[in-house]
Every structure is written in structure tokens, then in C-alpha cells.
Image (cartoon, rainbow, N blue to C red):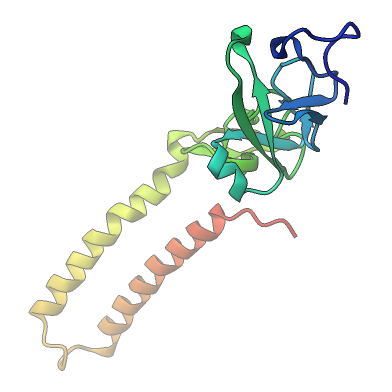
Amino acid sequence: PSSTSPRGASNSSECKCSTGALMQAGIGCVDCPMGLECPGALLPPLQKAGFWAAMVEEGEAEERSHSVSHSHQPGHEHTHRHQYSVLECRDDLECPRGEPGTCAPGRRGPACNDCLPWHHKISGGTCERCDSFEGLPFLVVLGLVPVLGAAVVVYVGKVDLVKQTIRALTAMMIVGQLVSSIQVLRAINELSITW
């Protein structure tokens, strides 16, 4: 990758990379790594659609794979070293083209894997805010479990279990199984499994 203008440079502040190259501190211009789009000059790179890039600290970048450094010279006074960690995303919709760290609306985290809190995945790679009604069944069950548990403890404490009929014990076991089933079904409903 070429650097500077055809006339050359009289000092290091005039050194610029061509399009498709990235200025790396202490090295000069290097080829733009996979997942980044390098506009050249001393401009920071952009992440390509389908990739997620984040600026990380120097020491942290050495621990991550696919890290690349970028030198930026604001005001041409000092050279700052930036490292970028690049991850491939599940698809182009969740990780659109843009500045490093750009995610589809409602998404966050490395490779835009997560929806924001109180958001759920919808088509088009985005996540939208949950309606308050969607959590209502869970809150009702969550509120009923302690009440039913307290009722069972009070009932069992007052009754001699030896004299209890099999019908009453069966009813208590059915209620317990029903509560467990509702919790399990709610948890399964939250899973998003692609076969």
C-alpha cells in the first residue's frame, strides 16, 4: 500500500495511506484487514456489513484475534495508536456498515449478538422494545408462586399428614407440577433455536 503524495513528504505529519490501506503506528501503511473498509489518508476505518469492529486498548487487543492497529494524527501533532478487534456477524442485517461498533437498532455487544434489555428479536436483524403486556403472564406467575407456597406451608402446618387423604395430597402435587410446567414453558418460549 502506498503512502504520501507523489511529491513525497517533508515530515511525518504529511504521510497518508491510499484507499484500502490503514496507517499502523511504527510500521506505516498496511493492507486493510478483512471486515474493515479503509478510506485511506489518516481517516479511521469503517466496519463492513456483516462484520463488527471495536476499538480496544493496546494490551487488550493483543489477547484478541483479528486485531489490527490504526494510527490517527489529530492536528498532526501526536500519533495515537488504536487497536481494532474485528468479528464476523451472523448476517449483514445485525451488523450494518458504519463506524466501528455499529449495530442494527435495538442490538448491542460483540458481533451485535444481543438485544438491548427489555427488547426482543424481530425480522430484519433488529430488536424492538417489548410491550409491557408481554411480561404480564410471567409477573402474574412470579407473584402467585410465593402466595401458593405460603398457603401450602400454612395448610401443611395445620393438618396432620398421617390423617390426610390421598386426594388432598394428589391435588397439592398437581398444583406444584402445574406451576413448574408454566415456568418451563415460559423459559422454552424465550429460546430462539434455529434448526
